[in-house]
Length: 244
Image (tube, rainbow, N blue to C red; front, side, top):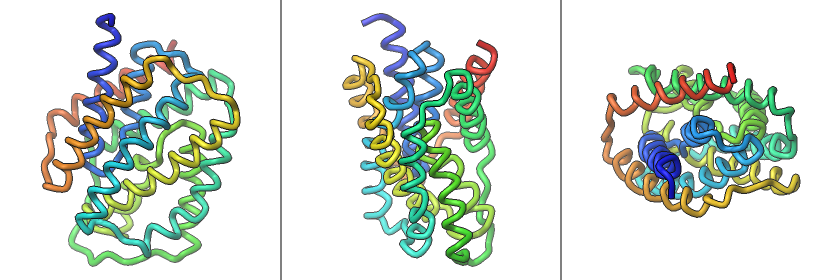
């Protein structure tokens, strides 16, 4: 195993640990690491979706079991996001378009890490079904196209709009990421994806990080320094994608 292989494994573990602590599965972190270590673009999306499914399973279980979940908000969000994530997973964008779209997702991920909106002191209120479903559809399509689960798009909206408190927003995002990642992976599977040979090792690192991070997240533990460091990695990876 080369130093680059070890570096990628450690990056995946760190991303899974940090992201799962806030109810996310880490796709933007995995994609940033893969871009940084020059993984082939055609392998990045299917690999990120596999890792996302595994970590989202762990994270969803932890947050739902802790009572940090709201079915009445999740159902309209997921109603159209799942089929749209499948459609997005079917599409194979030209390499350059995919790089730009992914770079945008990484920039949003960096913003989410360093500037986390809060729900304030307002009492949470549920949105209209049509509004939540429309939002879910847009996020689902972006999720399938880029290989992320959609949490980096969804969580800020939930908190800004006051639809849920922070812990419930994390739990909803975790399950949302899970169903969208499964749908996106199913769509990608139809296109005969190319998986990296090292994927089993990456999966082990991601699951280990997810177990640790989701435990810390439920216990309300966080690390601002680590968040800023990972945000810097996302920005570097986005720049690499844009200018390479």
